[in-house]
Image (tube, rainbow, N blue to C red):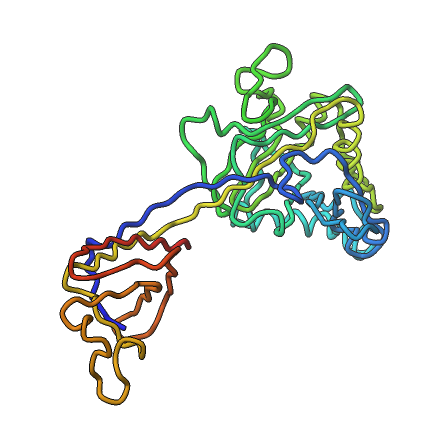
Amino acid sequence: MSFKRLNPEDFVVSSDSITAGLWSGGEVELSTFFTSSTQELSSAGKYYLNVFQTASTEASAEIQFAITYGNLNGSGSELYDANVDGKSYSSTIWGQYRNLVLGDENANFSFGGSTGTDFWAISIDRNRYKEKLFPGSLTLSLSGSAGIMSITDNSQVVNSIEFTDAGRVFQLVSGSAGTVYTGSGTDGVYGYSPSSGSYGLFLPDIATLVLNPIALSASIELTTTTGSNSNDNNNRTLFEAISSSVADGGNAFRLNSQETISSDYIAIQPRFSEFNYSENPSFISGSTGEVIYNEFINNPTTYITTIGLYNDNNELLAVAKMSRPLRKDFTKNASVRVKLDF
């Protein structure tokens, strides 16, 4: 074993962005949607509704995303206590997402300049991605009483990126796969009608979509029910809007994940006079410390198979294995590149 100190110029750091299909099996499109009646009828079902890619009773079933509904005034869901007005499951969801996204308990959600008092949220299951969502890859079709529409994010057309406590935020607009629809009618030059605001917010860093019911109602008559003392099943309403849109000819739910992989490239350069001897028992006598074979005294030959990276405390931090042994003697000046991904 031989050691050599590395210099700062022997290190180079590089970052690459890797994208992949978001859904189970690395699929880009999700076109079948199932729920679990057990979960929906449980106490958890009053807060959110899990969506699977196949029947929840199947062994291959995996949660793809969850749907929830939040309301500033606590409407649209049962009250915790009939004697305490406004405190319900939907008010709890509103407060949780407000703290998560806005970081201010006095702030309200703003969709393209229009303030709303309720929302739907789609949270992608954490097992579906490693780091974040890929802006510009979103296509979500929704079906309402007035027809079907597809929405995407406006990341490909904005000049500057907005940030909240949850990271980057983009507006949800009419379009698909990052291409914004800017036709006439209810969709103006920004891909939505300014009078009702954008269709919601796209938050790639926390893998969440926050939908604006006011804009969706104005475009396709997809509405929420806001009774104050009963479970109005708004989670189910959005689920039906997503699942029925595919059956009616709409686009599948398309979305990619994104991961930034940083690589540390390290140049290892054994020079002519270095690493030509070995402490291996086949090379050096364990009892006398002499070179076993005379021809290796002045003309040794070694084979490099493993490179270990140590810190100043002589602690082994990483091991790199050669794809094949590298022959080394006094006539060879080798160069090895070690790549560490993190």
